[in-house]
Amino acid sequence: MDLRLAGRGALVTGSSSGIGATIAETLADEGCEVLVHGRNAGAAAAIAERVAARGVRTEVVLGDLTEPGVAEQIALTARDFGVQILVNNAGPFAEHDWESSRASDWRAAFEGNVLPTVRVSQTLLPSLRAHGWGRVITIGSRAVRTPLPNMVTYSAAKAAVVNMTTSLARHLAGTGVTANCVSPGVIVSPSMYRMFEERAADSADEGNAATAATETEGPVDEADIVAAYAANPTGRLGRPEDIASAVAYLASPRADYVNGIELRVDGGITGTP
Image (cartoon, rainbow, N blue to C red; front, side, top):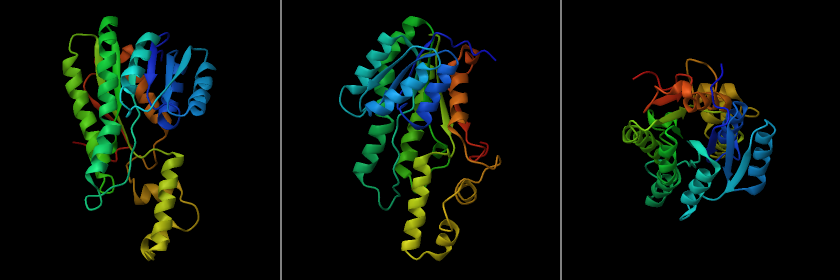
């Protein structure tokens, strides 16, 4: 199916690795011109090279979105690049529970996940309105519906992102610009495997026999994670491509009548409302 994205400009924040990089490459496969964003020049350049190999125009913009003025400057660069599709993907996660989390942890979660989305979107909106067509797509999390007890600050911040998406869609009514959110489930990534390996090591060090028995018999594999952490009707973990495909659809003119939603791409882990 032709998604009718050829020639449209896209900014994907946090696209120098992980899900963001796959989103950038998928949009390029559909003919989008892509502005790659990251904090590491080498990593961002490598993704831009892969995007350019698809035969589309690409540039790199660098900067930490939590630093004063950086988000706004990146949005202005996106405006000059001709961006009509904004994918707010950047956002850190950290493990904190209700007992251990401090005020600074809550602040960091919102400063990393909420405020950059607000600042980039606000700055770019006048340009999107001027085009008369645009997309704001934000990456949420399955933690929005099922808050994770070990990631309470992250879960709350991502819930705010979904709320903002609904608000923004209403604000943009009649402009030709839509706002939607894609909430991934547990997605395969090197950082995810590292997290589970660290948990397994911690369990073994603490003498937690039950946990160690399931988590330290050789390398942590996908089946272990699905069984212990991410049981879902689909029976597997997600792939970055699963999220990128959903983003590409919502970015396309074929999704003109889809607005203000949270699209859960999580294998069914959160169930139904």
